[in-house]
Amino acid sequence: MVKTLEYLALGRAVAAFDLRETRWSCGEAALYAADDSPAALADVIETLADDPELRGRLGAQARDRFTRILSWECSVAPLLAVYDRLARSASGERSRVSRRARKAHIPLGLAGRAAPLTSAASAQDRRA
Image: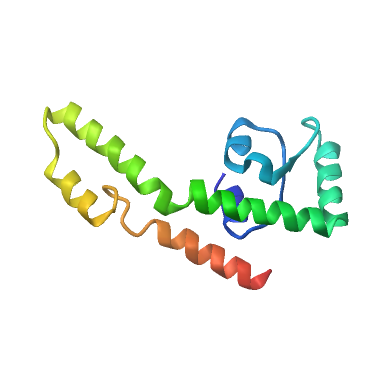
């Protein structure tokens, strides 16, 4: 799934099998194979290869979906809420570490892990 998210972040059109997670991640920003066969996926790839306007439109939708729903900035608050809920249920009170992480907008144990995706995506975008 990381590969699909990187395509979205880069504003690339996505050709994919119709899997639940891919459908959730990509939404309408992807073309989905009609069935689970390699030939069906090849048809979708060929459709994208032959239609630059469609690729551009899906790529713009992909980038928009990533920035509005899937980016790290959109994930911080929900992740912190889960950590807080888990910390409260485990200790019966709010965790001090959790409060510090919330103030810094960094989930517990995940500081810096978003940067490599951004860096890798940027490097891949420069090569494309």
